[in-house]
Amino acid sequence: MPAPDTHSAWIIGYGNRHRKDDGIGPYVVEQVSADLGPGCGIGLRSLHQLDPVLAEDLQGAKAILFVDATVEPLERGLRWTRVQPKQDLSACDTHHLRPEGLAGLLESLYQRSPAMWLVSVEGKDFGFGEGLSIDAREKADRASSEIVQFCLREFIDKRQ
Amino acid sequence: MAEPKKITINPVSRVEGHGKVVIHLDASGEVEGAQFHVTQFRGYERFCEGRPFEEMPVITQRICGICPVSHQLASAKACDAILGVEIPETAKLLRELEHMGQFIQSHALHFFYLASPDLLLGWDSDPAKRNVLGVIGAFPDLAKKGIRLRKFGQDIIKALGGKKVHPAFAVPGGVMNPLAKEDRDRFLAGFGEAYETAQIGLDLIKGWVEKNLEEVRRFAVYPSNYAGLMDEKGCPNMYDGTFRVAGPDGRVLAEFDPSRYLEFIGEHVEPWSYLKFPFFKPQGYPEGCYRVGPLGRVNVADAMSTPKADKALKAYRSLAQDGLEGATLMYHYTRMIELLNCLERAEALFKNPGICGKDIRITAAPSCSEGVGVIEAPRGTLIHHYQVDEYGAIRKANLIVATGHNNIAMNRSVEEVAKEYIHKGEVREGFLNRVEGAIRCYDPCLSCSTHALGQMPLLVQIVDPEQQLLRELKRD
Image (tube, rainbow over all chains, first blue to last red; front, side, top):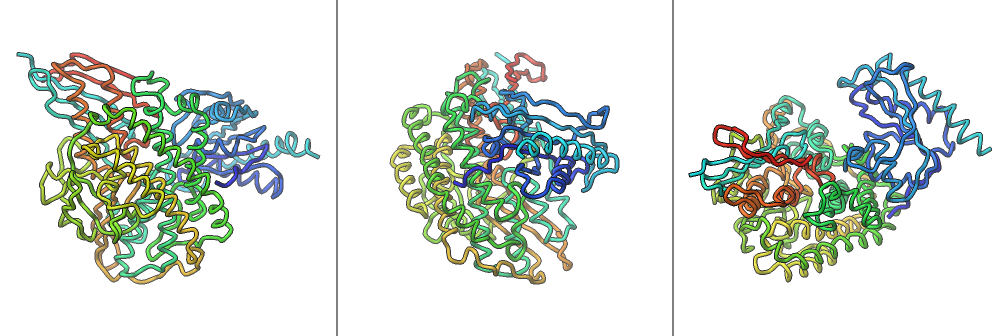
């Protein structure tokens, strides 16, 4: 079967683009991809949801950033959290996982514990429809530029 | 004399949280009947009314996140019939290839994630560990192989439709995208490992059945009809064919063009469930119970269409004689035979010289006011039937999904388990695991959520005729 798509660093944005601000994760990945450009060496994925089969592609990662929308009001409109592996049913399902569940799978299946962060971005409107609300777009743009700075500092500059 | 009692198991599965089982006991505490309720109403048939028919492949695939490809294909076939067109040969090959990707990912998901905890860790092992995480802990290499095989199927879907879930591919008159030659070559290189994993699954279930013959022979066994789409040689055909219904002894009772389904399949409605109860009309309801899905297809087949799967079928048949054909647990075995069959079929399709052709869609104006599209979804036969007005707007939609076809059978399975485990109002240890296991054999769409990880949150309530709670058994 085809070999896994391996990168040492990944940015994975997930959410439902058809539920307005729930599409923040994929939107941020698009922005980051445009800023970093092709050949940046970072794996970029936009997903509807996290899925256990993703673990195979992530097995070679040293660092992973997840980006997801949240309904929770956040002080800056966004929040960075370190992801700790969790190996119980509360963190996963067969069709989708939370980042900590995916971290747990990486640990138990591949004995890998990459550094992982979840960047949560506050959304306001999760109704039917495509495109972000003005408020969410502003926060998502801020998250994108923080992520780009982080990538340049942690992954790209260090390689040069 | 003791009062009649009712046992409620709720929820059986998350199914958006809307499934439950009620066991009815007679006055002496023996099982009188079982009802597997589906209390969720989704209303797709109704809210599709008025929509342009060409939107149906997109709308109806949203019914499910596991088998959207099946809904998309059945819908596209119904739309082809409304257009009155025969789609180009390459489009047919590509649709079937997408469908094989769907079967590979779905069967791998069910066997390696959902069924394997029962088989590898044991029915009565700690429910907290009897799940896919328990399998990963105890059998990490097998879990990795299962993940890779599922991904292989998902990647085929993605290569064709751009996404693993809800792809944009089959449309009325054909498909949207051709297959790139580099994708074809990439997948062809991967079949060796895929066969190896499928064979591991097949060996595992064969060995399990051989070791647990007594349980297999006893567990939720009852005679039923079987049904599925067959090709002209009597082999299961997942994309097209004639609909064959056979009796418990394998004798063919009917074989017909599936567009004539209304002549042979009735739909009974019970007030306690939103899921309809399809039945084989010549035998009436509920005697006309039939089972679809892997067990149904394999049990009505004369042979399998590919060599590895046909060899596996022969081994299954030599083991399944003496009544084991009706054993509900044999669903798992037949699912693995089909997994091999679908891999072989996918490989043959990739090798077909026409698979990378560019003639993939035909456009036409609607020429018929009605269209029926029937395919075999991983869980069983899927029927989409539309009627349209002069503008092509849907006037009426009728969908019969695999879980519906199996509805009577699932109720019977739960009842058989209950009859074995409940006597004089007392519930024997292991009952919940078995009810869960019986439903899981059918891999119903309801399962998408809950028994997802091999564990259903179960609540058993024993209540008196006045609905007063007498006893409660619970597992979160």
